[in-house]
Amino acid sequence: MTPNEIRAIHDLPFPELLFQAQTVHRQHWNPEEIQFCTLDSIKTGACPEDCAYCPQSARYDTGLKVEPLKAVDEVLRGAAAAKANGSTRYCMGAAWREVRDDLNFDAVLEMVHGVASLDMEVCVTLGMLNVSQAKRLKAAGCKVYNHNIDSSKAFYETIISTRKFDERLETIDAVRQAGLEVCCGGIVGMGETIDQRIHFLHELTEMEPAPESIPINHLVPVEGTPLADLPPVPPLEFIRMIATARILFPASRIRLSAGRTAMSDEMQALAFCAGANSLFTGEKLLTTPNPGESQDHRLMQALGMQVEGAIR
Image (cartoon, rainbow, N blue to C red):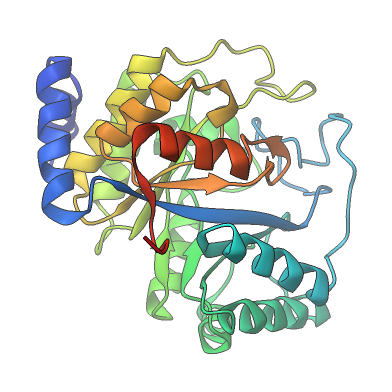
């Protein structure tokens, strides 16, 4: 599909866009269920990259407390608590540029094995890695690797200078070669144009097979980062991205990720109607605020929807 064809879908009259997205969604998913995931920052801050949106970059003064790699037992306690709250996927993120074959990676493999033994889907995001490292993750029980492309290729290189867009694709290729599922999405609201958002979606359509999970993040402006003063994306523009992604990727999870604290109940409900069927729950999303478990359960109850995997 060409960028022009994707733009034509994105620009449909809003009722038609939502109708098409909901139709596709119902063909592949239960529209009344939302998967709960939990994201744990297992190593926080001091990242050498210069991603303009990220408070974990060592290049920006955001007041973030740098924390070393967590102990395995602490991570496993967090995973057990997340499972008890309804999460079926546990994601672990480390603020590294790339994976190194050292004791820290050995500890992550132990975390992966432990979380997998809880009968949860295990996802990790550790930066760049090679095929051998990805195979070690899979052998430990990892199911999914997250590595976002963030935006279109042209816009990406105005936001990040410490690595190239193609390096992102090389990591995703390594993940595929190892037999892991791919979680790959981006961020809306970094100052990009509508056309650049379309090219971001087009990049995802070029992946074969498509990512099994596509997180759509709403930028959380953090004081001290270069993007701190950007205005929020208009809600309907964000919903158009969700709906377009659902139409383009019928069988993928479309995940509401960062930025939900700025979304009203009505905006999130509209996102679910547009085809989002997964969200990150918990008090924090790595280092930025998140609505929290009680708020998410309240919203599900208000909408008459179910947490996927919950006992009815």
